[in-house]
Length: 109
Image (cartoon, rainbow, N blue to C red; front, side, top):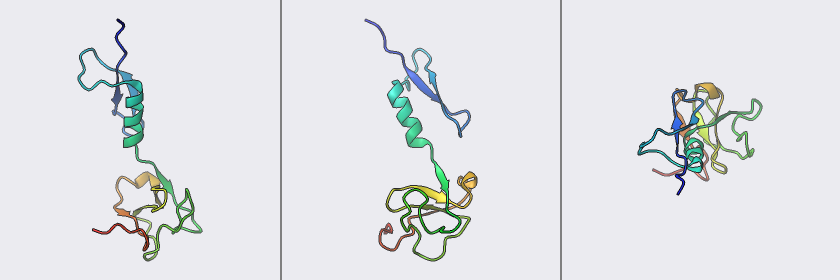
């Protein structure tokens, strides 16, 4: 009976995770599909907002920031498609997360 090849995710470069062949006996090894799903779930894509309409989601164009004026040093999340966007996407890891800033769909604490 052939043994199925097992994989692992290499997070050495956090901006570019890679799927590698797991070492024999690795207890965290997974199938190729599972490894791809881990990368999809843990990579956080942040888009740049539209300059002319920063209150709208750049992906679906829904009004995502209806509470005040969007601030360039925050990361917002669209209430419709869950896309994260900010003025400075490369700095998203350092910027505070404002979450959903829509009057209709705002998450209540």
